Image (cartoon, rainbow, N blue to C red; front, side, top):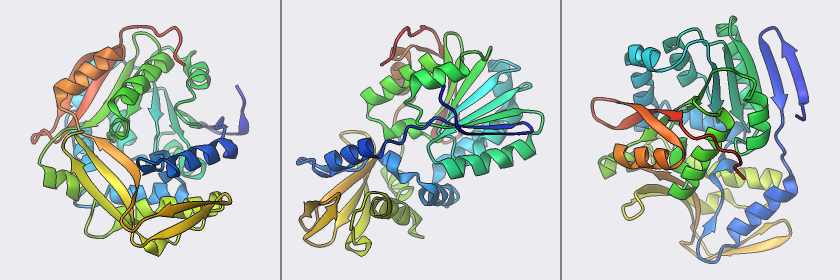
Length: 336
């Protein structure tokens, strides 16, 4: 395993294995913006340091129900969490973000021995890992800067852990098209290994207005979060987006059962990026994110297809959100 910027400090260990090949990012960004059917930017580019902090702010907004609802489930159903999940386990959090949920989750478990947060935003990851290590001095912390699609490297790191619980909260799984979500779940099962667990948060379908308001808050924080992806391209990819000439838009696509976020060009314009011009018509959009909404039955079926057995589903009183306990039932020999 390549260990870059490895740092050991008491119960805290930092590993950077993220292969941030700018040339690959460049190809990915240009391919998305040149898509003739619909211009796109991969939602993973939201999460630079500024984007991660903006998203953390979004989670505290009144309109944004997923975070507070999921935290409430973790707080009020500790007994069931303790009953269904193994003791003395290593907890692997995919796309860790802030420490809000993991603290609640660990407090419900029996004697967790290690925490391995994984995130691509290095600075944000390491800051949160330090805070976590101070709060839980008896738990070993191994913070890993990586894309959780780096399955072979991540499997190598966690393979020696005896009992493993993967943690993937926040309904991040909803950002992936169902087929890609199934593939991601297969990858998680490969990383975790046979008979280990994955605890995953899933946003359930509900009233359209409630869902749309969660992605278009009255304070405009989500709009800033969306626009920030263009600012990141300006800084990191030699782009020249005029941020004032784009605006945030979200809506529920009933046919696809997903919330879509877009950036709308206010005018007809051309934007330079990597010495290429990207032309926009007035009203043309860049599709920046999907958030698929599932029924409990739909997500259970998807999980089964990906090699998991559904052991338990926890929900809130309004059935806004589900926390699924999955157990790897089939060992994946090779996931590419």
